[in-house]
Image (cartoon, rainbow, N blue to C red):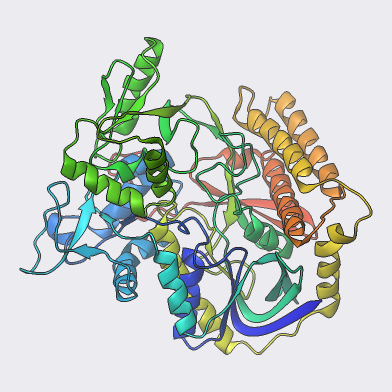
Length: 576
């Protein structure tokens, strides 16, 4: 059964970026549809909430000597977050994001998301405001200036869904995107399959926006060993990236790497949230087994990387495990941090678990998961866009996933989503109306639904596990002792073997017993396509050159690569 929908702008993915794109495209006069794998009220990385939002306010920050160029430079190079990125940042996009955050906050406030309060606290920025006016709760968060808001973001996705519906946006929930449709090199729509009914959807659109999120969640083994015990939503599986790749869109790729320091992110055996990070401000501190303070608080503006030297010293001395300890905080500080937990994605689950177990931050310390130094990380692959959020393919725009343009967090998605909606609507309303290639549509339907009619084959879980094994090998070759340089024939041979294994895995037949399993099969197919591109890129020495974006695309089904300099508008004040 096939359902056909005609619209001006199709948004694939209904998270923060997708909803913002849809709202602004509708405000610019376009007919808009959203295709969302889950449900827009609770989908995406912010589906369960968000409590922090970095921003720049022209009424606050210039008085403190903090300009947008300062913010861009800090997040790219000089601040604590910037030092982890080492200049791997699109400063032109980042400047757009920074400049757009105040408008974004104003819009979200007007739609019912609370950002300002009658009461602020000593640990919030004490800025000048008119008497009697509610004020932002501004806190530090790794940047060199106080530029992060604490806010009531638990239901931000519900508020955005309301605004989409108010504007007549057609929302197709439980429909998973499977492929982009093209005609003469122009994107003219997309296909999807309903997760519960199996109905095949064909969207004809003048412009398409990819907003599927940035985290190929199941490409590698998770830290917990369970795909569905992770901080990132396990349904963000590279669907947008794979669809765009197959259509000929250009992506940026960075290789796997190694962590440099031991550190903390999660509670012991609970990878479903990042409750040890900025959300516990100002109450939390990290201590070793002797009660010695390792880090006063992860959000304070101190050199976190140097503080981790204390952690490594404690490891050498056997003073483990480590704990998140709130027991010396005041009642007011703890209540504030618990309010943040109540709004931040999945941190509220910790509060519910504590209630069930009779635990309390006021008296109990909580063991932390120690991430060892030298741990392999997986790398990234995402769409490469210009400052209008346009890809190299006419008619295709993106707001998430895209190259790094700030922290991988709410402000980037919200601002770029807003911008992509405007630009896609402007394009769509001028388009002449391309037609669909019916042969392409029929071919895509056969490809997507094949596991439902297969006589036999592998379940998606089996193929996904084998994919993880191959990609773990890739991480070792790229980030291990023998980098694939001019003399590292062992690594190059291993990578070539990994590509062969991935191509064989792509040919493996999968079987689905129902439409839910069908979507999981398609997710794994998408991940394999991404894996092949990433591993192939690792054979190119240019990928490892600092100061360049490494880009790739498929031409007649074969990967082609190029590099382009990263534009630096605002160089580091600290020098190279």
